[in-house]
Amino acid sequence: MELDEFVVMPNHIHGVLIISEDDSPVGVRHASPLRLPLQPRTTLGTIVGSYKSAVNKRINESRATPGILVWQRNYYEHVIRGERELNAIRAYI
Image (cartoon, rainbow, N blue to C red; front, top):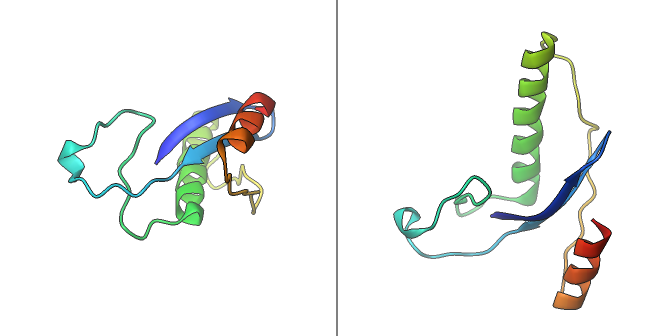
């Protein structure tokens, strides 16, 4: 998974996640803070849920407000099907 274009807004985020199938061993992949190796059956829901959970935890630690929910329950997703569409979404973000 790779984080492409993104922006943090006052009460939400916009971002493009690139999820690719890579058969190379984990040690061969080029790791960076924005590029993570995924397990074979990782879903978008798992990725978003993990992100929201980690951010929620950090916010509550910094505010000393354990257990307070930060995120809305759902999220909006859209499959980008071409270069033109990807560029339009990048420009919007």
